[in-house]
Image (cartoon, rainbow, N blue to C red; front, top):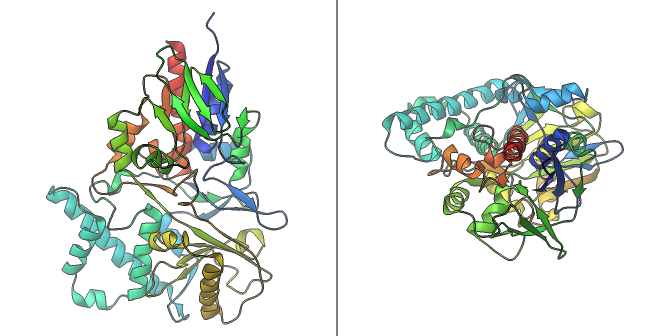
Length: 452
C-alpha cells in the first residue's frame, strides 16, 4: 500500500485553495496550506465596511458566467447570491453617467463615439502591426501610428477628454501602460462568454471561505525558503518563525510580483529563497512577464448624492488617470458606497501619497460634479504594490513577452515542485478564473505524480 504523500501549498489565495480542495477531496494526500497574511484570499479579499456589508479590495467580478466557468459553477452549486453588473466589458458604459473635467454631464452619444474611435483605432492598429511581421511593438506605438492615419476631421469630432478616458480604461483593464503592452500578443487573453457578476454584501470572500472550509490552513506562516536539493522527494519548507516543514510535493501559488522580487530583483523583504535556484528558463519568464498595479479608493457616505440608478460613473479630465471610473455599490446593496478605480500611473502615485492627500483630491472631484456631498463615514485605499505578499495587482504581457512565458512558468519542476496562480494560466491570466483553473491543474499534476 502506498503511503500518503505530504503536500505543502504556499499561499491561500484562490489558486492555492482550489488546489488544496481538489487534493483533499481525492483523499490521497495530506495537505497543508501556508499563508503569510492573517487571512485567506490573497488578492481576493473582502473587508467589513459597515453593518452587514463586506467590500472587495481586490478582485470584484467573475468574468463570464457561461461556457462552463468553474467559478460560476461553484456559485450555482451553492446558490450563492450574485448580481450581474454588466453583460459584456463594453456594456459597462450603457447604464452609466459621465462627467467632463468641468463637472458637466456628458451624453452617452459622446461617450460611445469616443469609445468607438479608440477601440476601432486600437483594433486596426494591432491588426496592422501583426500583419507587418516586423517584430513586436507597444500598443502605444501602434495606436499613435493608426491615429495619425485618421482624417483630422474624425479626430476633431471626438471629445479629447473621453479619448483619454477610453485609453485609461484599456490600460486599467489590461494591467499595463500602452507603452508596455504587446501588440503581437494583445489577443492572447481570453474570457469566458456571458455576463460578469459580483457578490452583494458578502464580497468575493464568500468563495474563498467556501474553498477553505475544513482545510488545514496556517495563517501568519511566511515561507522564506524552499529547499528541494534532496532527490528523494524530501522538500524542506522554511517558515519565518524558524519552523522547517517537510513535504513530498510543493505547490507555489505566490503572486508574480513576489516571484519577481524573489528571483529577479531580490531584496530583504518578502523573498522566498529557492535552493537550488530556479532554472534560468523560469527566471527569464518571470522577468519578461509584466505585473501591473491597479489601486482603488472606496468611499462610504452618510447619504447618497450621486445618481442611484446607475451602475457606473465615469469622470473625465485632462489628468486622465485620477478617479476615472467608479462602481456604484449603492445600487445593489442599498449602502451609499462608491468604489473608484484608477489608471496605472496614478495607481503607482497612490503608493507614495498620504491618505489625506488622496481623499482631499477625490472629494474635490465629487464636489465639482455634484456640487455638494454628504459626510464621509469611512474610506479604504488599496496599495497593492506595497503589499509584501502581492507586490502588484495582476499579470499582463509586455513587449518581448508572450503566453509562452506563462507556459514555461506553469511547468512542473522535477515533478515535485508545481506552480499555480493567475500568472500561470496562458489564457485567463490576470483573473480569478485563471487563478482557480491553475490551482485545479496543479492538483492534477500532483495526482499524476502520486499514480506514478
